[in-house]
Image 1 (cartoon, rainbow, N blue to C red):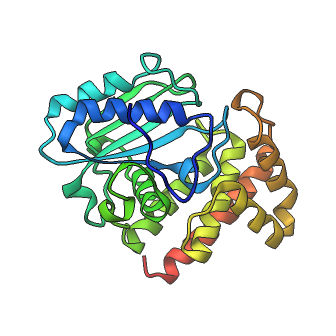
Image 2: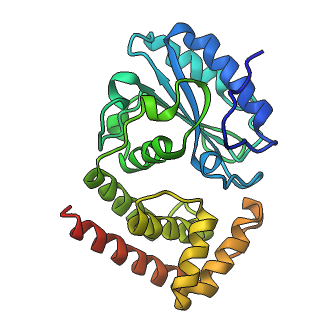
Length: 266
């Protein structure tokens, strides 16, 4: 049986058996071409909420991995063939030849979404996807990725260059400002995380970032505190937030991000 490698930051109890089986199946499919399996996203940032959060995983493989293995991996990990205990699995596969260098591109070999609350997606054409999500995820992985198998994140994933990363943050804020397909609480908390990143250069857990922004910005404190309360509930019972207040907050976030980008010359 495959065992998750020890890491200074422990994983939450609930997804551990699932992640162990995910690693086992990934090793079986990829064989000697597998370099790393990394927990990223809320797992890496210490903000996983069972029943609310996705399980985010980054897989790094040698470029010599046969193309057929990507199809096989998507099938092996698809829910309910491998039942996902979280809201969903968001797994991205990269080649070492891509992720060893900073990039502002999406660059994946496979983008797999599957699970009880996610629409199924198994895409192998990175050119069809907006790059910003992947740039931000690689930045989080480089900073805090938890090693489930193989080499540590910082050895295999290069941090994106700051101009590319700020461009990705700007695009993510625009996406959340539009609101379509995103829960209001998640839009607010992602906004908080973007502001804190612009101020500190570090990625923080959403709720930690929310506390920092709420303390500093009294005008938005009630909205942010309501977003945190909603985030701590299952997705199916999220608390509605005032549309106008969410829009005003995200406009403020966007202005802060744009200011940071201009100051950095991007």
